[in-house]
Image (cartoon, rainbow, N blue to C red; front, side):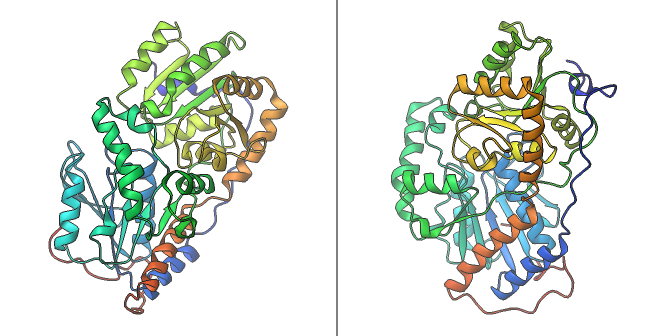
Length: 433
C-alpha cells in the first residue's frame, strides 16, 4: 500500500490556504465548569460507556465522552469512565487526568456496570453520566444519584446493519423503541443536535422538555494550513461499518471519475468492512485512485483534511458528523446525506451541501469539484461554521445539564472550590469500579 503522504500530500503545488483560526482561551470555561460542579456538589462523577477511546472500534461517541471527561478532570472533577475491555490494553489506566476502568466483554459490560453501580464498587459518585449507544445501561432503574444520559441519535435500522442475526436485531429494536423509552421519560437527555432532538422526540416519544442540545466541539489542531491538492481529492473518514455506507460512496466516486479523470479519493478508518470495501474498489478497477489507508495519525488526519477539496459523508445515521466539522475547521467544505445530525453539522449552501439520495450526492460532489467559485465560498462558510464549536463549550454545557439535575434532585450544597484549576476536588477511594 502506498504511504499516506504519497496518497494525498503534494508539497509542490496547489492553492494556498488561509492562516489558522484563532483559538478561544480555555481558562474561563475551565473555571466555569469548576464553579458549576462545586455549587452542585459534583466532586466525583462516573461515566458509563460501551467502548473506550483506545478501543480499535472507537468512533465519535468515544471521542465525545473522553474529551468531556478530560475537560471535567482539568476543571478539578474526579472522573472515572467504566467501559468494556479492549484487547491488549490494561483493565485500569489513568489518562488525561481521569481514570478508565475496562472490564467485561462487549455484552457483559452492561450487567457488570449495573452491578458495580448498585453495589457501590469504587465508591458512590456524586453524579452519573450514561452513554446510551444503542443498548442502554438502564440507569433510571438503579442509579440513586443525579444523572444525565448522552443519547446521540436513534439507531433504528442500524440494528439490522450491525447485527447479522435477525433475533438479536429484533431484540435491539424492541429495547430501543418499546422497553427503554418509558424508563427514560423522566431522565435528562443530552444530545448533539436539534435535528437529533426532534428525531428522539418523534421516534422514541421522550418529552422535549427533558432534552438538552449540546453540540460537539472541534479540536484546535484542526485548522487551515499548507496547500490544497493540485488535483481533485475527496476525503471520507469514519469507522468502516455498514451504517457509514462507504459502499455507496465508492459507487459514486467511480461515476465521478468519468467526469474528473484526475480524481483521487481517500476513505480513512478501521472496521470490519475493510476487506469488503477493498474488494469493491478492486472490482471497479479503482485501486490506483481510491485509497483505504486505515486509521490515520492525528497529524495525517489534519493533513488529509487540509489537502482535500471536499469531505464526504454518506452515512445513514449520525448524531452530528464530527468529521464534517473537523474538516470545516481546515476550511474544507462537506457534502453529506441529509439526515438528522448532518443537517446541523452542515449549513446547506453555506458550509457545504446536503443531499437526499445517492444521485443528489453525486451531483453535489460534482458541483463542488467542478466549480472553484462555489468551492471557495463553501470553504469560507465552513471555516466560519466550525469557529462556533469548541470542546470547552461542550464540556460546560454537559456539566450544566448534570448540575441542573443535582440541584433539581436536592443534592447536597456547595463544597469548597479547588485551590487551583485542575486540582482534584476529592481523593480517589480505594479500589476500582
